[in-house]
Length: 521
Image (cartoon, rainbow, N blue to C red):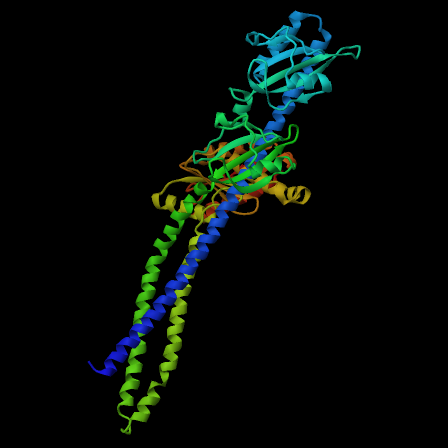
């Protein structure tokens, strides 16, 4: 083997090694950056979702507290008018406990904390003078009260909610109150225990003294959580979201909110590992999609390296024939080497550009609208393509919120986002598993109903319209929607024409007064 051939082979390998290393480093950097961006996105979405969930539960709990206080107020008025009638006192405590099932037990006490009536009778405390914190606080304050958790005379860990009894003369006579047990079945368990996730997510509640008053692990109820950074924020009247660790040391993504009347803090949290579990499969999908392009790029690199070695070999051959007249011309002919070097660089940049383009394309393949959780235009296109290929008929519901700009301008975009999310939930409520719901614009939505004729689709549209009209949208109050309905292939054989027809029906509904459904006849 000659020195010339060794040099030529080594140079080609060096070029291949350098170009392959460059491609792999760039690819690895792209994967790393994509992984970090997606990871942070998943974490932020989970934190925001848990905060919204905790806020919703806090609002529901606040409504419940207000409701039971109103019940107690009404009963206090009934009892005040019949304070000396023991039969009515017993009847009222029984009614108050059984009518709404809000309390585990109900009692009437006089101003000396003596129990005058109870329900159920099994408590066996009638005639006793209570020295429990809840009763003492109610007698002392002489106003509506919600106690801190304490152990009752019967040995139950509970919360006592009371209302004063004021006679017609204005004299304070005592209090009527109900208990909510914390370690037994109660309305609090039913209110907070309906959690539909099975990935390690859970809800717990703590009071301002850091005592846990609700937890799916009953053994945790009643303990003081001193080493919990989320609970520390409750005493500061804060709500929000945070990454934390639970008592088992598991990293959690928590959202928390306060119940204003009681000062309780409700925490909704999900294991960080469960949130990031989907990231691995997503990155594997990215690799599987980019690997063919990467292999094609490496093949192009090898071919380009071979092209580079050919002019270099000609230069070496010319160097061996310096004494020949044609050598100068031959060397001049090799001047295109610089152009070829430039081309190699261009090919490499093109190859990396293809990889970046493919990764960007994968990012665009995310089918979900991040605000509402509905599909986007890509999911719509996939569904339509599939139904067209299988000749599956479908109906289109074009939906638009009436005067949505007024909502944003009056209440702000945060309220507008809540309206969009609640409307999305209403659309899910009236849809089937096979239906495709998409957000295609700011306040514009589509519902695609496979194997559904226009008549049935119009009924679905009317049901959705009525549901939205009858619902309250938090700060925005009442809103309405307009809908347009068309069918493929009844309305047209062209899917684009059907979509346009549904849109035209939507605008017809708006022009006809809004809050209505128009169907292409």
